[in-house]
Amino acid sequence: MTDIIKLTAAETAAKIASGELTAVEVTEAHLARIEAVDEKVHAFLHVDREGALAQARAVDEKRERGEKLGPLAGVPLALKDIFTTEGIPTTVGSKILEGWIPPYDATLTQRLKAADVVILGKTNMDEFAMGSSTENSAYGPTGNPWDLTKIPGGSGGGSSAALAAYMAPLAIGTDTGGSIRQPAAVTGTVGVKPTYGAVSRYGMVAFSSSLDQGGPCARTVLDAALLHEVIAGHDPLDSTSIDEPVPPVVEAARNGSVRGMRVGVVKQFRGEGYQAGVIQRFDESVELLKELGAEIVELDCPSFDLALSAYYLIAPSECSSNLARFDGLRYGLRVGDDGTHSAEEVTSLTREAGFGPEVKRRIMLGTYALSSGYYDAYYGSAQKVRTLIKQDFDKAFEQVDVIVSPTTPTTAFAIGERADDPMAMYLADLCTIPTNLAGNAAMSLPCGLAPEDNLPVGLQIIAPVMKDDRLYKVGAAVEAAFVEKWGHPLIEEAPSL
Image (tube, rainbow, N blue to C red):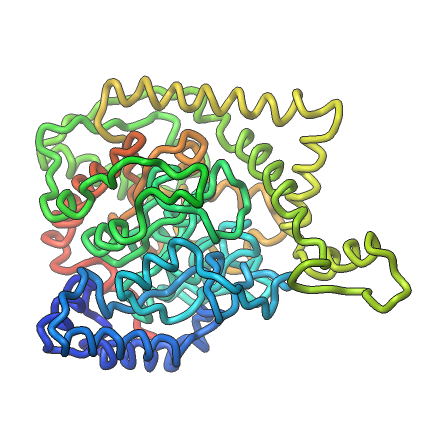
């Protein structure tokens, strides 16, 4: 089992295609790993053992019939519990959808199944993707496999923890303000936020519609690229879906190089609040890029300092609108429907019982920002700042091919440390939020351990809209250099469970 779960997704798929391993053997090995360690980690909210084994058997039958298998056929995956899955629960980490079984698959789920990827189950997350630590889940926090007393990031901490604990070689996350990249950074894994609109949002429970984006999570850059290629592409069911070819991300990951590229370093992405060890590893990464043949360009993007404030007006405003559909009348939890309460009272009682504190906080903030007399002062002003951020990115990408930064200002913090300080929690997304506001593509990959606590540090790479292949080209080059430096991928150093 140990040998199987340590394989990359690309290696696993090759062994299944050649007949060296069966998809059932691979799936059983990962299900056994989940059974052995997930009681401690709590990465999964629902494990679909029967469904996963049925998918695996179907792959083996295809191979026996001589059918051509796709690049990820038979490879197990952990799916964030925000995408609808026909026949198994989708809770979004909330009591308000506890036990809800969707009657349809999200487009992303359909594409995974069509590619013969084996879905092991649904992963834990901050309720409605609101948070940076997975502590806001109604079903309890997830632990970071590097140190179970630390957070695994959020909102997609279940997916990142599943990767770091070898419970799955692939995972899916969503990124509204950094919820793929920040968990990847603090768990020593790879996470990619594709260009906004590159991966369908149909069937993804909405938090902030102009910011939400699904994307791939893995332990290597190539594995992330292979998954990216499976899930990306135009979807007529999503009105924001981009009708353009998927960039050549797999080719870029197989041919990583930064020679001759211009790499930008933004001065706003450092300073007060950044952990010394994070800055040290980032500076070393910039030096490495120079050694690999990149030209480093200093950039000034003044509007980035306003990104956090703008985000926490735009995202709650859209959340206030999107979550209005959870009224206790159509699906999910219903409280007070005993014949003595009006429909309005049932809705109020249901929301009081079903939504957690962080979701209520953001609904109230958003409702206030959208209210009569305050719309222009708050939401309208935030959208103007968003335009300025996009303009800063446009100017920057006239000078450089990609931008690099730390993914997060600090390494993983202790569970409970920031629970009563929302502002401290929000600062975890300081480096990731500008990309969501502009709609660009971005990746986080490991760049070493912080010397003061021996926990993973993430390097963020940002590319222009629909130039996602640049992330993989640079990421693969950096990853190869780090593997040469350490002798193995960083994840191999994660403490054993």
